[in-house]
Length: 138
Image (tube, rainbow, N blue to C red; front, top):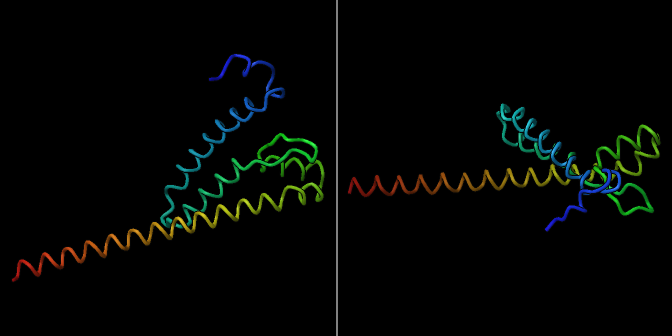
């Protein structure tokens, strides 16, 4: 159960509240992205784009070496690159790109599994129709 003390203080004092606001905003962006990508005819491309956007929005990254707090990896990468230059990107960038690659692989595996399942369903239906046709002619 959440008590009232959980919401006290500013967002900077309570990272849980900041993450709640961020995730609500990320959910809105993801719904918008979902609507944009629904017109893409290729399901593989559509799923990969959606997974990349989801991973880019919600992956956390540590804010510093001496801190336990986490921040969105995309925002950390942008801030580190703008304020820290190339050294900042080299700290956050590889893990962010690794997260994105993982999202692409998961999306491709999911797409392959969906295609395999649909193929097996169609083959089963064809066999059922063929058996029914043979039974009618006999």
